[in-house]
Image 1 (cartoon, helix red, strand yellow):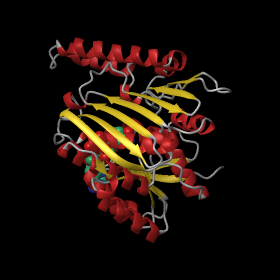
Image 2 (cartoon, helix red, strand yellow):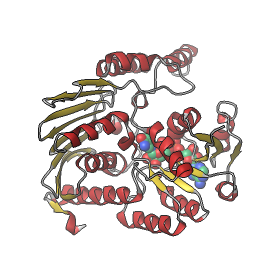
Image 3 (cartoon, protein in one colour):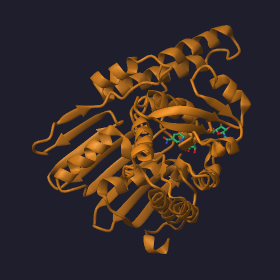
Image 4 (tube, helix red, strand yellow):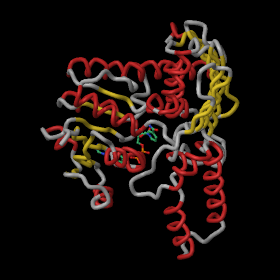
Length: 383
Ligand SMILES: NC(=O)c1ccc[n+]([C@@H]2O[C@H](COP(=O)([O-])OP(=O)(O)OC[C@H]3O[C@@H](n4cnc5c(N)ncnc54)[C@H](O)[C@@H]3O)[C@@H](O)[C@H]2O)c1
C-alpha cells in the first residue's frame, strides 16, 4: 500500500470541520491520524462522524506522538504563531491557517523557527492552490504575464461572521488572501499601497508592483449572501482572463487557449454531491442559483419561531440539501492538504503559500492600514 502522511488536526472548529477533516479523508496521500481540540464536546461530536486513530485535548500528546508526521493548525489567529513554533520545535511539519500572524515581526519568528527545525511550514492562504487560479497563472505566463488586475471580494462579513472582530480587521483576516493572490499572479513584489475607505470593512485598495503591474481590490463586508463572493479580471500582454467564484474561467483574445473552463470542485464527505453537478454544468450561474436558494431559506426561517419544531425540521432538511455556500467552490483546500502531504512524504518543493508569503501579506496589510488611516500612498520601504 502507498504510504500516507499521518496528519493531526489541531483546532477542530468550523473551518476544520468544513474543509480540512473532510479533505484529509478524501485525499490520495494523507491519513487522518489525530483530532485535537481543547473543547471535549467538539471531540465527542466528531467521534464516530470521522474515523481518526486518536483524539485528544492536549497538544503535548500530539507533539510527543512519533506516528504524527504533520499538523494542520486551525485554531483562531492568536494561537497560530505560538503553536506553529511549538510544533516545529517538536519536529513536526506544519500547515497553519491564515493569517499566520497579525504582524510581519511575528511571521519572521516563524521563518527562523522553520529554518532551525529543518521542517516545512505551509500557510493556509489556499487560493494559490485553487485549480482555476493555477490554470489562470499558467495561461497568464503564456501571454506576457499579469499586467493589470482587478479583484472583488464581497461577502456578509459586517452583518454576519465578522461581527465579533474590531472595526477594519477584515484587511488582516480576509483580504490577506487577496494580497497573496495578487503577488502569486503577478510573480512580483508590491512597491506602493493606497487604501481608501468610507466605512469599516469596505476598502478600495491599489497595489503598485515593482515591475509596474497594478492591482485594484474592492473588498466589502456588506454584500448579501446571494452575491457571488469573488471575481477577478487580469489583463496580460495579449488578452484578458476572468475567473468567477473559482468555478468559471474565460480567456479573451488569448490565441491557442480554451476560451471557457468550468471547475465543478467536490463535496464534503458528509454531504450529498448535487452542487458539484450544478457548478460543473452551469459554472457561475450554478453558484448563483445555490446562493439564491440559501438566501430564500434565510428569509423564510427568519420569520419562523426559532424554538419551534417546524423551524428545527426545516433547518435540518435544508442543512442536508444545501451546500455550505462559501465552501462549495474549490478554493484549493484539498490541493493544499495533498501538497502538504507530498512535501512531507516526498520532499517536493513548496508551491503553496510559505511563511515568507505570509510575511509579505502582513507587510502589505500593515501598509494598507497605514494608508487608510493617513489617506496617502504608502511606500513599502516605510514598512
Ligand atoms: N483558509 C480559509 O479559507 C479559512 C476560512 C475560514 C477560517 N479560516 C481560519 O481558520 C482559523 C479557525 O477558524 P474557525 O472559524 O474554524 O474557528 P473556530 O473557533 O470555529 O475553531 C477553532 C478551534 O480551535 C480550538 N482550540 C483553541 N485553542 C486550542 C488549543 N490550544 N488546542 C487545540 N484546539 C484549540 C477551539 O476549541 C475551536 O474548536 C482562523 O484562523 C481563520 O482565520 C481560514
